Length: 411
Image (cartoon, rainbow, N blue to C red; front, side, top):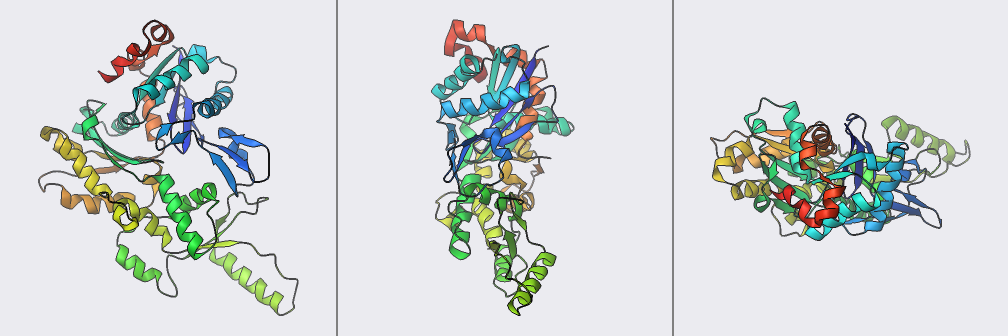
């Protein structure tokens, strides 16, 4: 049986691996980076080896959820495939590739053309992430009636957008999908503005601040109480993040109490003439930004967006599905995507969604074991099953029938 390469193509990162090795996918930025004043460019996987992540000029092939830079996207994937396959030609492999929700036919055809003509795969299958994530979830919870029916509501909190996606019989219900125009990228930009105004100018540090956001942010369970606590002199939410030096500390780190005490003591000693002045190490102070940034997902109106919050979007998506499916959908809500890893995300959503659900409906919200990898894991399960050969389009079919060969994915 041929090997199948599985690629979850996200706006922020690429998850890539072999269906034969489902426990070891590669995760790397879906971008190219150039350091200020330097000529060299780091492409995709090469960005993982960077020692200095400060002041990077990033180019991303994905904009607003859709691939717009196909040349750059091909270069990123081709480079990573070379190391993944280790000399094995793509012509002996199949491919499972994720695509955006409501993907345009022209963009779908461009993705298939890249897979066949430029990357050289023998067969390809495209799918949106939600049904793939649900497959991975069903494999872990086969006892759920909704899992047995291939039914559930997948919250895909991704890089570009956040989607509430009803799925039935392993198929997305397109008319019922609801989208919030907020994703990881917008939340990082919001955090850039907040910390640049209150602490250090970080407007050119999107790549670094994305890492800081993932380290420090959490979803508040009581925003008013946390805001009141943050205003006190000894805020329990205040953290100091030591920024990277570009030499020994690539990403920086959260300053511990011991480090802060040692730095204060050394500074006092230097001030008394007991030693040379210490080199200043830039420290980013973060307080209520830690919970006010992810709060925008639950109340977009707080940042001037006239959109419903996440709980309301989920309720609207369920209402748009057939009434007979409502109880099944609410009984199997799955949280996926990088933003869903934020601590407190599931608990807050349960608190806000429960009042919107009829009392006689069971509400179960599951957080995927690894929300960012859930779609890739489901795609790997599909790729390793006999279903792949039924769904995939081969090179021969593509050459003989063109775009008509893709119609079976919508049946």
